[in-house]
Length: 195
Image (cartoon, rainbow, N blue to C red; front, side):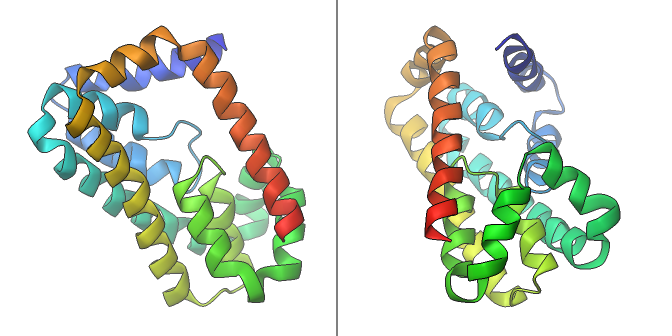
């Protein structure tokens, strides 16, 4: 948990710099193809600091994340063996890749949509979409819908409940981290059996 907490704190420190918006964009972009920390952490902090801009920050996250997803698709399509496989292996996603391969034609859109909303590593699906040459426009639509839902729900919660959300996260960080890992593992199991 210490490593995750350090990454969390590192991400949060950007909110106190003049580079908060570029950091939010880069974090959202990179998380969709290789970086482990979700941009929600910085999104929450920025939205709490200026609640009236919460939806603007969500829009930045969504656009950057979808662009990062396109990069992930490109990694899968053009450079899976050299770039994509090490990323998938880092997230222990090879078993998911194998499961995706079997059912992608039937459930690809739903899988991308679910991964774009939930803690399931979206990056594995972006890379898999390229590897298995899933229809790019369907991939793009699922990514836009899923990432919009995820980030605008977070922005809506901040807009509605304000600083209480941040205090809650700070107070229960370890428990929330464990819940996040359980949801992540549950997502992998769900995909394994759905796919």
